[in-house]
Image (cartoon, rainbow over the protein chains, first blue to last red):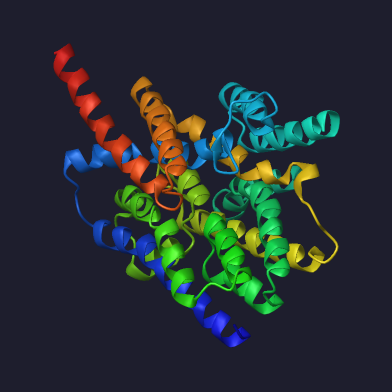
Length: 108
Length: 240
């Protein structure tokens, strides 16, 4: 693909990304939602983040893995503890990355 | 960073610096992930301009990593656009979930705000807007800081791409999971949310392994949210 076509493709990717980001908030922002929908939406943050997270911790190369050499799963334990105990967003991310770096340094 | 904290504190009335400060944890995650994207884009044969353009125009982590890989594999524009659409369709749910917090916003403000809605900015805004209505300048500062760090990470990743073969030794590839953990934990405010998070995570893994590797997130989220409303109603009925 030449650079021009790549750029046009990127613009198309941008458009199909932007519309789902924009339309619901544009259409719903002024309205009062029915209590059922509001309750359904209140579950979205926790469920969407868990759905994004879980495959990264439990799958590798398209397969399920609970082996002890799954460094992401092991690092997730202290990361969860820091997030829960200290409620520090910055500290949590730093802890997770630090543990993975240390684990790789010592065990591989 | 301490200085920024003081600045954020001092200028609380202005809000902007406070928003920059609140976005710092996202910056910590976005620079390495953006870097990884930049390296991959360079190796996939994308030019500097298009690599950075994707971070400015699309601004979506996993979709850009998949996209760079597809460009490298010489996929058609149609495949690229369709894949991006499916991967990013989950933002539909996040956009709807934030909508009630944007009451009274002007249309152009919503248009700007929605442009920078990502998994991470969504989760942060959900927390920030939970009990209060933060200043708009603060809200936009969060978004602008987040995207700037993403673009910056992509740029240095591209420039370093020739030298770097593997980003794994430094733990950079755990930045995204770590961010999701940091954002997920504060959302679990009641036992029913914990149950549904576990259900959603389990479903997402199962769908992913079954081959729904682009739509697993949105399907798992919708099923778990629906079950959650049902369970909540059932608990209410059985306690009254």
